[in-house]
Image (cartoon, rainbow, N blue to C red; front, side, top):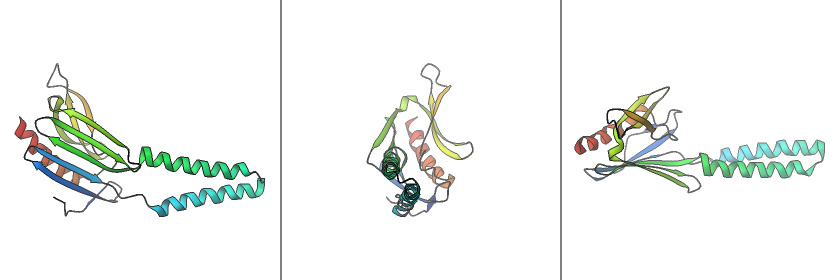
Length: 177
């Protein structure tokens, strides 16, 4: 089911939250960021190339133009492949665990699975910003938190969006305990 509520990230940019209920023990949350602006890419590219042309005009060295083209193309490819996340998803399966996925603009996907036996709790933590995180427990000492796994690191949704995901996750976790 699609969500009608409007959400934004910590920078004030619009993001969308899609909540899908697969069963009473399985829900999926997808936070989507806005697509890359072709206008921004063109402005950045044109400004670098104009700067390179100005340097070329005074130095008459064609290596400057070639370098500018290579640097901007390499920079754009690296940004698309390693930095720009299109959407992040959280799949909570009550009996199995949690799957966290990040899909990049290049099509690359990074997925992590956390077994339910390792999960102590899911909380909203406050540092400089609010963020949703999974508390992992130490296998030998179940009352000790061994590590913290932050969720939705790239999209950085605001508290109202995190609260909606948190409440739904807690419903599933409470049914499993």
